[in-house]
Structure formats: C-alpha cells, structure tokens
Length: 228
Length: 228
Image (cartoon, rainbow over all chains, first blue to last red; front, side, top):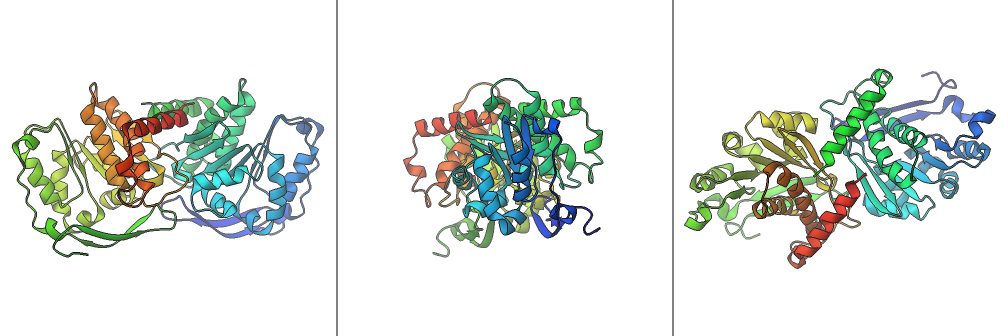
C-alpha cells in the first residue's frame, strides 16, 4: 500500500461473492488531486463522474461544456464523509449510479425500490441501482427497467464489476444514436455483459482480453434468457 | 401453536425482508399424515408436490396415474433430516423448486448457477431456483431463463411467497396449451406476479382479494420492465 501514491481500497467479499465490506480506503494522490482537463475532454458529450470525492466530481463537471448526458457513480465512503457535497451534485447530473446498500443508506429506506424513488427527489432523472449477482435496476420517469446479471458459473473476483458495468453502459450510450430512453435500457444490458467478464478474472486479467464480439454475444445471450 | 393439530413453521425474516431463518418447525398432523387421494385427483395431469416430507411426496406421487408434469418444492428441513428420501424423489419429477440457500446447501456449492447445474444431475430436467426479491431462475436443457420479481415499494410479509410463486406457475401451466418450454417461462412470470401480491399483505389478506385481471396486469407490467 503506497500511501500518498495511489488510491487504495481494501475490502473483502462475503463467501457468496456478492456482499462487499469496506475495510479501509486510502485516497493517496486523490486526496489533493485537482485535475485540469484538456480542451478536447471538456467537449465530451457523455460524461461519467466515476467514484471519487464528490468535490472532485463537481470540479470535473465545472469544466465540461454543455455535456449531453452526465452520470455519477459513488461509494459508501462519500455518503459517510462527504454527504453535503454529494447532495449538491445530484441535481447537476442526469443519472446516479450506486449499489443497493448505498441506495438504502442514502434514502434511509430498507426497500430498494422505495429507496430509488426517494433518490429521484434529490435530483437525478435516472437512478441506477447495482445489485451485484442480481443485476441492476433503472428507475426513470418512464418506469422501471430490470437488467439481470449475466449468470456466471464461477466468480473469481468481483472487484471492479460496478465500474465495468457503468463503463460498458456509458460506452454503449456514447456510441449509440437514437432515443436516450431506449439506449439506456440496452446500455444496462451491455453494462452487465461487460461486468460479467470482469468477474471472471482477478483484477484486469480477463477484461483486457475481451473483444467486442464476445460482449455482443453475451448481450444476445441475455436477450434470449429474458425472452418469454 | 397447537401441537399435534397443524403444521407450524416459526421463523423470521431479516430486515431486508429477503433472507429467512427457520427457528422451529412443528409438523403436527403431517407427522403421521398418509393421504389417500380421491380417484379424480389421481388423474390430475399437472402435479405439484408442495413442501412436505419427501416420504409423503413419494406417497402422493405413487397414487398418480401418468401425470404429464410433476413439480416438487422443498425446504431446508428436509435437506437436513430426510435427504435420502429427497434424493430418491428427484429422478421421479420433472421440475424441482427450491430457494437459493437450499440450492447451495443441496449442491454444496456457493455459486447458485453452478448449484443448479449440479442439481440437474440428481434427476430433474428443470431446476427452478427462487431468489426472493431477486426473482427466480429456470435452468433447463434449452438454457437459462431469468424471471425478475415484481418490484414492490413495500413488503409487508413474504411468508408464503414461495408457495404463491409455484402455485401461480403450476396454475398457469395447467391452464395453458402449447409447448411446455414456452409455457414454463411465461409461468415463471405469472408465479412472480402472484407472489408479489402475497408479499403485500399479512398472511392471506392480500392474496384472497386478487383477481385474474390484477395478475394479468402485473404480468404485462413485468413484460414492459424487461423489454429493451
């Protein structure tokens, strides 16, 4: 653990490889990180404010020029130590992405569906709740969309699966034409497909070998598994 | 608790209303129950051997005349005290219905998808794993089908939701023409719709007021929530 060098998260997964416990988070360089974005980055239409201090998410968003769609991810740490900053961010974004236990904590509500509804009132039009092996929910003004996880026979390491999910989702959105509402749903399926590869290897060992064909194949597989 | 009179299960749900712990089970009359089925019952084509001692499930199945489709439900108690009888039942049935923790216990496998595959090898062509608020999985020779639960803003009492699920599924199968594989998938969605009503009231208070129209409406709602 190179303190002051890199962001370091230490945690553990329960034996079911689904529930995560944070043991320690060391921010390292992120503690004083204030990125100055190159001009070309500032014109990005689809912006993902990945999981980092909400103050930094604000700082990045302040530099963006009229983005078309802004999503933000978070984690329990920011709910605990930077809630005010996070609450100020929520009205500025289109989609808020968080996991089920974080949704429960933020909304102070045990029922995840009720929690998602409460989170809408804090600002975001779209609330995306990640549920690990149970997939993810999209709550939107059009209603609810359910995207099950790709069923895996073996989960090697789920670390980074949530980031892979939102990366796959945002990549799909950025590459797609047509109405956002439809793209968001299909993007959730893409996110789950990408996340499934992440879980199949330790760290990035599996993700770095994934092809677009392999992702498309899992998306078609998920389509078949949901058709009735 | 009228000992010797009725089957009595005492348990509790965790605060998330999803994980169940059995505290005690009193079999009551079921301890010595050996039902003799009326002739008209013996000719039922769709048979559900609901959750009871596997020896009794054998006893009922022995009386059936060439049923078209036999499903059996179970619970952790029988895995603990009547595993041999249960293992002898599995090759005699078409579909085995159990919850995720029971599937893990029976297959001695933490991953639910891998557990379902192992359970096929014990006999049943169809393995249905109930996952509470996360819906249910159907594993079949054609592959996997995922049926998410109907999203509820408030769960009053999930007791009986599993029985409602399999009741809705079997009712749909018995009332439907056409190929079994397709009916099973749609039946899973009907099962989840019926189970959602069960969770909305204490005991049977909500279930007894449900109409077929209300069930069909939730099935259509689930269809919309899965379409992308």
